[in-house]
Image (cartoon, rainbow, N blue to C red):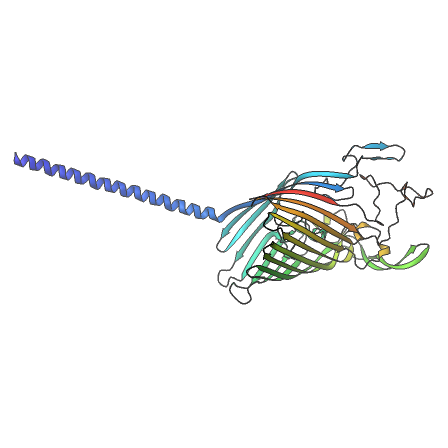
Length: 476
């Protein structure tokens, strides 16, 4: 009996020991599986951290005077058949609306940006989505060397390295648009090319110095024109103290555009009639040239930025001056934004120009409000005599703008802005012969409004071109 009990006891011990061993093996296997899952999840999280999505949407409402220009493509001008109640006057031979101002509403920008970051660089893809359709803005990669941490290469479609106004994001800018000179010289702000950046290492006495330079196609976000490449370069210095930020830079654009005609227009001394007399002025004169020759696009710029934080909030001042030579069409100084060989207008007018702008932005004491003042000036043809200026494209313009920014939340911002252009009245325009005016002459042809307008633009006086913009921006 004793032997039987011992045998049973031993059997129970052996059975229990085997169960314990088996349970430990099961627990070990489950623990290893859990550890593998944790490691896999950690790897996935690391990969997801490399991928970032950001963007912003700008919805805006505009009220413009009759000769103002909206930012709505295809709807950017007053049209008396669409704006107001249109009535055709058989006696005058044209129709009129019951008002001389217009409204516009739409999505100015709808940007979404995808960024993939690695230790050695990043790749960026940005889209613009509005009611007009979908287009791309940025498609580029940037790689940096890991040793000295001074050199990097950027290639693709990205911001041109010229001045401060271009690189200053539209989501941060305190006015609805960039200054008119930058809109004309750098439409779309971006270009296709490659750029080398040399930046002084952090912690060194020369920290803040940066040199950027590269080769670009010169025709913006479009199919590249492989016949030429333009050089753009910028040298800048930025410094930051506890409550003060300072920056200064100089830029250069050295490029060209082809002339597909056998005529080249330059400013030369010519004769013209004024008040019954023949006078000498500097105006347009054409010369015969070989077709498809290169003509200059050369710009130079200087920019400075200053910001200080005080008990009143941040005071921000930015200014920039740009001058140079621009070859463009007869009716606009705008640079190419596509294949120039397909343009309806020929790029065969060479102009010397200069322009400048200044921002003053002041936070209002412990409130989510900021006031904005902006002044800009552009002379598109500095060599032309005032008497020879008989087209709007040749007129010097001043722009005065003021606005209010309301930071509703960290993501939501409201902008209220009023922009007032002032055209130069020193020009060679003939005052329009308008019925009812003090200078009306019944023996001369009556001036009729241009297509879509109610009135005649009289550039011997200030033309009404002001625009009010109310913009709500959501950023994520």
